[in-house]
Image (tube, rainbow, N blue to C red; front, side, top):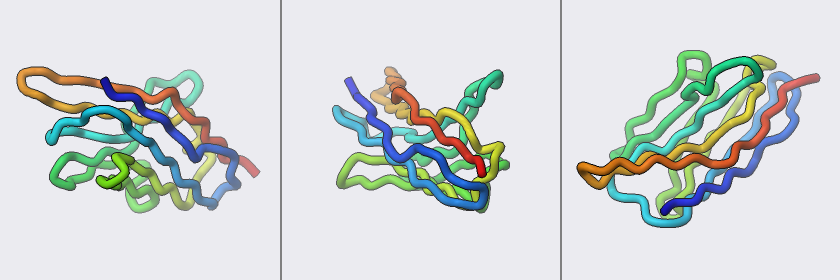
Length: 119
């Protein structure tokens, strides 16, 4: 079982920066995807950014060049550095970990952290 605890959300002005962190406790297998999703009111939850075991990353087009996802292996933490924030980035951000022990797949979610972008 893996538990995820997110931190770092809050209120920021347009153009500002925030850093989200997600600390994972429990066993994560060597094959994994760790990432961030977001959900704005009235919209579906959507992928923001993810990092795959081995180091490859994937970003939503809307955040490319502004957001950076990274993993701190020593702390079992996945981070999302968000720069040049826009009002449309406002949402609840959820940490997600998918880990694989073939043929099994395990999917975990954090509780969500609110990001508000407003002047």
